[in-house]
Image (tube, rainbow, N blue to C red; front, side, top):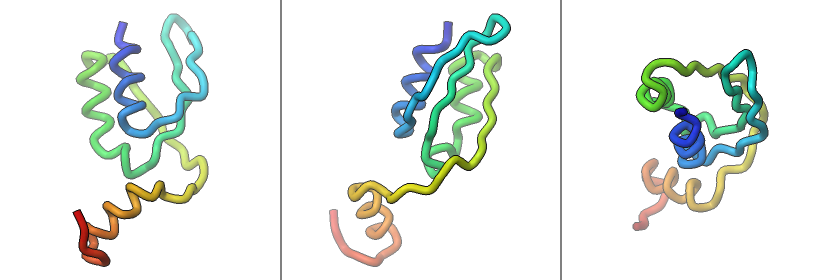
Length: 83
């Protein structure tokens, strides 16, 4: 079962799990993950599931960036200087 690794990876990407449902002998996970955190997800999911899992994405909503992430973005953009 690959669910532990998949759920752990989604949590590491700041994902919010809404539901996990059995579907035709498989497991379906509905969650929200910030788009910026989804880069490289296809490769990670294939690795965690030995190529058996798939995913789809749709835009859900926009949210305010958390302060720590906003600070990191501004430092990388050179808008502010900081650690």
